[in-house]
Image (cartoon, rainbow, N blue to C red):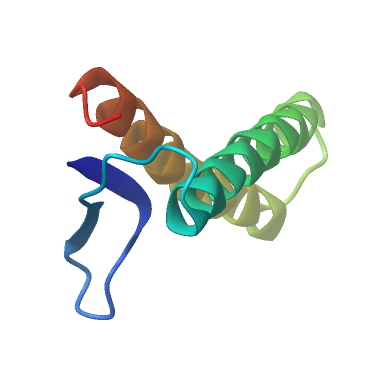
Length: 87
């Protein structure tokens, strides 16, 4: 069973049961994971820039933190999926 990098509409984890790592859904999951990791790199760079800006206001800091929390959740889901041997 592979933990997919998204949740269902009810917020519960989604899993894929297949013996074919090259199936369309497996490839889609790989693409989504890659996009989430790339996005996390950009969010991290943006958050660092906000933190280094002594004049950044509360709104900018809250926005950066919100995006960082979202990205951290995505990255942790990818890591848990890979660590659990779900692949």
